[in-house]
Length: 113
Image (tube, rainbow, N blue to C red):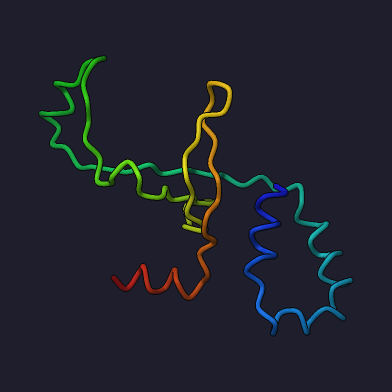
């Protein structure tokens, strides 16, 4: 969570910093929302396969995805794209480093494309 907050802080614009006098009220509202569970999904890639090919899959099958291995992965919260990240292996587990926070304006551009 600290990395997420740090990334958000780095992207704040000077106009957002002027709104600090109302911060106390914002903190109270934030406290009310802290315990609400959110579904976080990291999407590595996707593909479409006809049912016939899906039925032929077996444990050693390889399914090609629509992204290159060095492309950033999509980080979605409740199905909405909010960030881009890099995959890492941490003690035999996967981890994600957030490299870009997607602004609402950028999300609109992605929908239009």
